[in-house]
Image 1 (cartoon, rainbow, N blue to C red):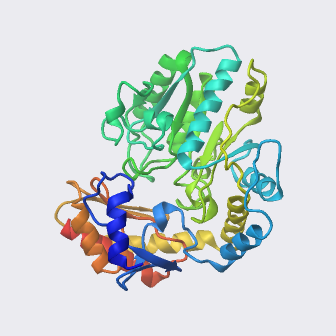
Image 2: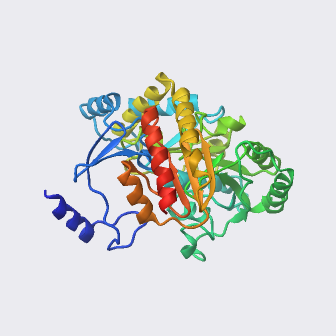
Image 3: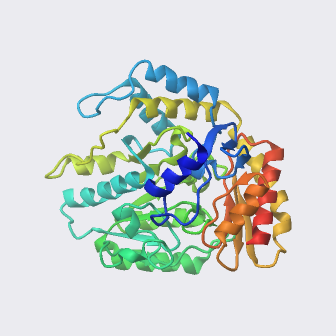
Length: 426
């Protein structure tokens, strides 16, 4: 179909994420993608600096993932998971248990990252219900976080600066503490840890769990913090009989330089949420892993089952591609690739530090962030980046990139140059 007609139909019928209906900005029409490049209907090619919202870590049309998808489609595309099981899902669950922090032994496969957070919260609430401690129904988190767009995840996103403040009074009211001091390598602030201790102790009788994004707060502000705060949370939650959830939907599978961000701290949460890069960006799938203690507590309750069952739970196609994606990651020097990208982003963004309007430049693993002292003119920044041959998706006061791990050094330089130019023009 003619691109102009497609875009006209898009404007009339398609509701895009985080946009009004009808939309105000015409999206770019992608016709195909290969490697780390998106091809547009107008003939341009853009290096994808976003890994399609941080998921396509191996790029596009990877022959290993394509083959896994085709092979599984030749066997079975889908089968219900209630009362049935299959090898791809069994292999995936086993693989996740082997790779994640020790002690997480049970895997609930679900549809998306937001749903994995819903499942994690439900696990924790039901655990305490099963033990007869029905007052433990609130969550504690730090500000500046983002955990998804469904209802319980929205309730633990930043209540003031996040995008879900409209729902105040409708969502459950959770306990919020200040965001952790910034800087992955900055010393742990003892006064902040003391504050965490006071808040968790004060609310212990009503807290089901503490939920945080470990090391990197993603869509809430792309902030990095010292892993020592995660160790403090683990000690405090254990001391006060509160469960701990790590939301690794954005950080899982190597993005921060460790396979999982929890690895920087050397601790195991009670529940771990995974998503995004789980299938290498091919199909939607997520997971919530928990300890035997959490699963056993639920199983001893009046309702001994977790009443949650997505229609496409454990989808064979997604499971097969997830297995192939994880194997592909582990069979290559992913740590070297992430370090190489980190070096390239640090070098490429060094010139952005002194630009007018730039408040901070920070890099961790395969994450690069230019923070402005004002909100980004998204249309202007996007235009500048695309003119430089790069796809970026700025938001709030941030111009950032999370490149696919297969980017060449030249492509990383191109991404960094586009970010710098966008910051100068935004």
